[in-house]
Image (tube, rainbow, N blue to C red; front, side):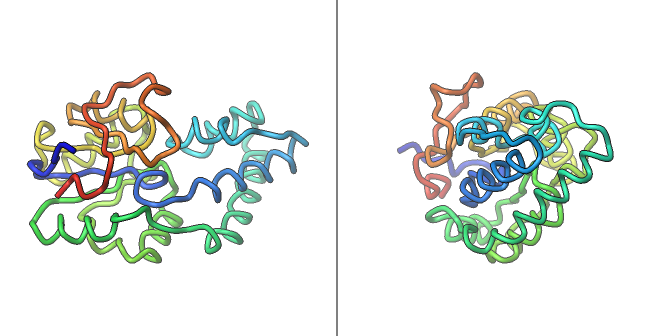
Length: 214
């Protein structure tokens, strides 16, 4: 496996990349669609859109929602996820050990996620990895979101990072598109729900194992 240890900055998506939340997210969207549309959705319908914020994803299943309905749907989804996350939340193999070593080597680390800030910070803290990140970027920090490059540009600026010396690691085409447009190198994780041949964007690397970064 090719070593990817020469970068000064490493940016990571959260869900599907660092933490295994696929079942939790799928169950939350499934229950929400049943509640508000009596509609069944497949796992692939959910995993193929993981990586974009909640609003555009839920509207893919339920159609356009006015503010009042959206608020109600979002609250239902959040309440359900809050009630089940402890049953599902876990790190992928070697994530914590790799983050610790990267941090000890002086690498600058950031999370760039489409998850809302409260739950993102909660999950990173509960998984005991929040302290290894120099920056956490959620949809609250930028006007535009992945696959737009703005979140990556935001992180580059905040950390005074040079794009060619930065690797953006993610599990979805939205991560890869965002990183490429911002000028960073990109790596698609092999343990996520999306395979290279299934996504439109072409990553610079495939990350077979987290410790390839060391």
